[in-house]
Amino acid sequence: DNPQRWVPGGDIKMVVLDIGLEAAMGRNYSWLRAVRWSQPQTLLSMIDPNGQPVPKVVANPMAVLSTGEWLLPFWKEPHDAPPCLKENKGSAGVLRSRDQGKTWRVYGNLTHPKTWLIENTLVERSDGSVLMIFRTTTGNLYQSISLDKGRSWGDAVPTGIPNPDSKVQALRLSSGHLALVFNAHRKLKAFRRARSLLDLAVSTDDGESWVRIARVDGELEGGLRSHYPTMVESDGRVYIVYSKFYHEVLDANRTDLGIHLTELDLEGRLPTLGKPVEMQSLMLPGGINPSLNRSRVNTSHEEVPLRIVTTAMTHNASKSKRRSPAPAAKLSPPTTPTRVILPGSDSGAVKLLGDLDKMLERSNRVERDMERQQRKMKP
Image (tube, rainbow, N blue to C red; front, side, top):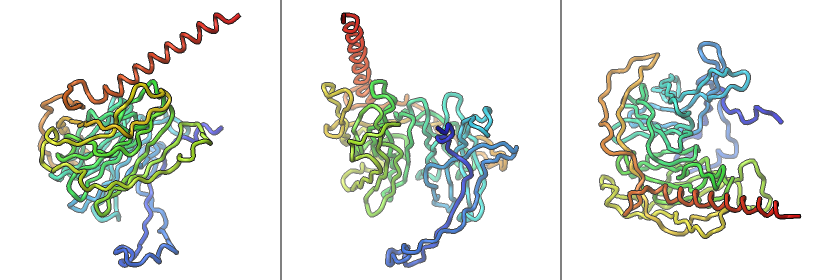
């Protein structure tokens, strides 16, 4: 009954837990019996310098750069629920610390005229630049690049990676690959409010192309959501936690809904660094049988090879209000259109799911027409 219960955001705060050297080395876990966190420290208030309330939100972990800087991605939530103002359009940026969290400064004010930029995730590339990836409403993930350790950011541009307006996370693996966990489809009319095809992809070229190496969850049904993934890497394995439930519906017959943890062994799954994506044969679970019941499609068994190629993006550094960094070199402009390719076909990988969506939508229309005709024929 509370119309504000879905409104996220507020202050960004930090707490610290000192676990000691023995616990950090994994030799002693007795500290777990008496965990004590520090008092919360406010890093960024929801009250902007002009005195207006603008909620701030964090959805992904901070990135620790090879040069020591800490970058925490955040965004200003675009909503007008009281006491916020309708003029708040939202923006994204980072909190940056050069002294291991003692002090923080805000950098970046990224916006886009066609979409919000939220739930941003950060990863450092091999050349020291930082890649930030955004959830958007356009059916694709967007990205921005910083060439100066997070002080300024290029324009947010589409990557061509499909996404139904849901959270993703990027991570640099110990192998040097970039990893991305995401829902690999656009919004589907035949599966309303679904967030499925939760995949793990890796990049050998700092995010210019991605190869999907595992399907974490492939059950596809209207309203069913396998989403909000978070991952960590340890000892050659990736651990992915995500939630699975129906949108605004409680299904008491399903005992497998809730918080899920998936463990993936990376041995034998990772493509060779520096080798072109098109030369590597990797398999993606994702075949779809159109004859299956349209209300629930499980895509976790058949194998379909797939690769995603994104364009190189021109960096157009926006000036920081607090500091003017030194001019940065330009990245190469796009040379080929952004595309998602099925080997042996130029029609696009998302077309596989798009065609199914269109087919099922036509089937739904035919059934609705038949039902209307039957109702008219009843005495």
